[in-house]
Amino acid sequence: MDDVEDHFQHTDDTSEKLQELEELMDEIEADADNLQPGDLADYDSDEIDRIYERHQASVRQDIESLDFENWDRFVQQTKTYALKHGIDPLAPYETLLTEEDLQRLRDESYDAQYRWDRADYLFVLLAGITASLVDYFLVMIPQDMPDSHLGVESEYAGQDGSPITKWMQSYDTHSASGPVADFTNWLGDLSKVPYDRTTAVIDGELVEHIPGMSPDTHRLQSMGHDPAIGWIVGFFDILRGTMTGFSYDNASGVHELFQGNVQSYLPSSGYEETAIRLIKAILKPLAHLVSDVGSDAGLPAPFMTLMQGINAGSIGEHDKTVGQIARYMYRNGYDFRHFLVSGMTPAVIEIVLRGYLMLRHYSENGETKFTLASNPKYRSMLLAAHGIASAGNAGKVALYQGNPLAINQAEWMALFRYLIPHLKYVIFDKHRLRMEHMDEIVDEEWDQILENGRDIFRQASEKEMETAQLGQAH
Image 1 (spheres, rainbow, N blue to C red):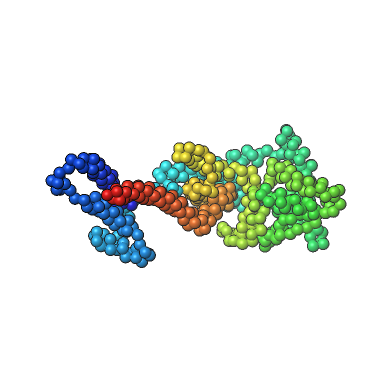
Image 2: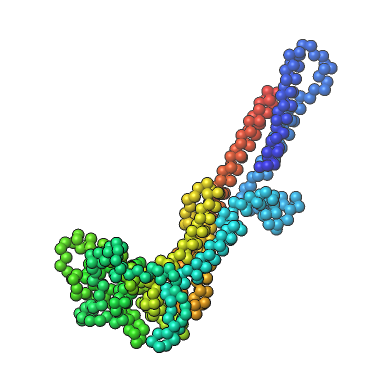
């Protein structure tokens, strides 16, 4: 196209020459009566035709060089052109482009828009390291570990608990006084639930004491007390007057799932009306969770009731299963309040890194709103920062001599929150999005090429018509 444009740049000069010749012919015709035979001695009547033919031949040659019958013919012409002009046929495509073209391709590539720069790396490291420091110096473990237990030296003796968790757990709503305690106790009286007991009828037999369940552990073993799934399980337990949870055999260390009918104030049948039963089943689990969150034993951390059902693993010197570790953590203060404290670690990352991303996005796009799902760069940066913090938490557990109480559950949950969508993006979406991005660029550039081509041929056709009319007039 550039070569064609160069040739067409001279059509104006050709038209001017033809116009001058036409004006000269008009003058000659006007003074025809005054002409003498010698005045036309140098006149060539075929010169105009020759100028027109040379111009047409030049344009026709350039246009035909862009045409090809089929792909094989085009490849052959390309090889011929490369050999004729001394171009290596095996040279990479990039060698045929200027530095400006190469830089434009780099800037418009799919990966370029999601490439990290030095500031991105700096803030990812800053957020991850800061979160690790908060985890080690503030989150720590739920409570101080005693020097001995039942006369035996404690395995983790001398380890100090988090001052923030201590402060939160020092307030027991069941024994304290004040508006907060009064409100939670009022909710507790109002939201009696069937799974707040240690007795149930299982398989038609009354079990006076569900194995492993006590006033201190019944919230761990009954799934209706789990902050993450308690509302769903509690809804069905209240409707049916049942209790769903896990029993625990202290001798074997095995947790078994059970569901039993509860002989209590809320029988499995005899509700007033269906609508009232549904309203109670919806509201009571939520109210009961709120009433128990500030109690002495507290609520388990999210999903901890499900973790106790994993009778697998060989963790630590005593080869404990995942379920046994979960039970140990809850009985040693790892409740929902400490889970909230451990949330400070991922919160630091979200505040620091999202603040940076918001300012960066505003400076580049003029707006502060962005969606992580549509920006793999931002999501990968948050994933990397949480990865650093999770690695720091693993180091913290090692420094605490393998004490599972040092595990930061909130941080690991945040890591998997970003890891799973990122894996989906890498495995399923990245190639498709790259192709869509290339299609957008190709469509835009192709439209521009077509428009430029139409402009060139429009100019050519106009000038050719003008030239043809002059030839016909002659």
